[in-house]
Amino acid sequence: MPMRPQLDRRRFLATSAALPAGLASALTLAPSPALGAEQPAGGGARLKPSLNAYSFSELLEANAKDPGKGIDLFGVCDFCAKHGFDAVDVTGYFFPGYPNAPTDKYIFKLKRHAFDLGLALSGTGVRNDFTTADAKVRAEGVQRVKTWIEVAAKLGAPTVRAFADSQAPYRNWHEASGNATREVVEQWAADALRECAEYGERYGVIVAVQNHLDFISSGPQHLSLLDRVNHPWCRAMVDTGSYATDDPYADIALVAPRAVNWQVKETMRSRVDAPHVDMMRLITIVQRSGYRGYVPIETLRMGRTGYDSFVEIPRMLAQLNSAIAATANG
Image (tube, rainbow, N blue to C red; front, side, top):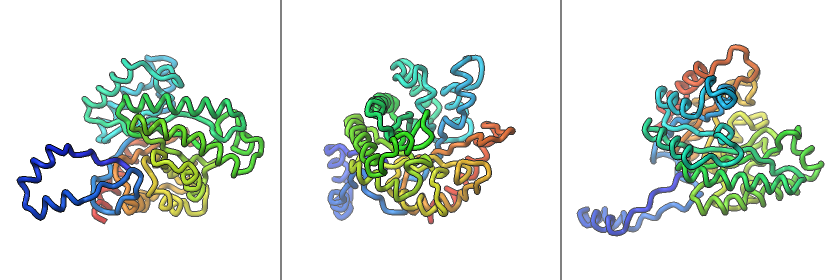
């Protein structure tokens, strides 16, 4: 959850002195919520649309190979500002030099560009594998997350997305782990994520663990891992298209109170043949969970020959905005 800024004591006393006694006393006695505490539903800041830059993955990859083609992160920011997004989630893969950190010059140029457009940078993310039996690969993943925690802090982004699922060349976590038990693999992932969260706390950046249709494919699995990590700077990124259950909305509702970031997908399985997201139902769940802040959408090709990011993103944004407006006072 986004944290409330601390009010300077001198300014508070000066302000409260001018208030009626009863109101000043109430302000003095009101406690601040602890980081990670579940927030009450209703009230607070509105939900704010963000775009996950991965929606432009093909064009971003084309630009990385040939700067005269595709789009870069600056162009993604321009697009977001033009279409009325509040923020952009700038996936780490598309920074120059990834997985190494970009230069400070690049980071601050992008940060200033977003600021001048009125955009926040709502997060970033990396690839990592904490399910592999190879301890060296897990350690490399921890270091990568730490590197990008520092990048996020410089960007002013509050979260870094980390995976709790296997990565190529493995097909699934069973293969990656050498058929280790779920208990063993969860402990590997929890230990790695806890180390990342401890580092994130030093920089004011929350580690957001994404479900991705592999080791984490249900709400109870997501919460089990977070409970084992047991650190207030490690929370959930809820990928709405990556719970492989009969009722993914139930999984979303279960995990939503622990969410610090989102990936709202077009369909409930991130496949073109899966049911399309019921945006009104989804945002009602988000609102009732007490979550406040950025809600990034992410569109994918999903094998569609006619896929066009410039068409699909505004269409999905309109659905999101409509649902946010309709549920704002619910």
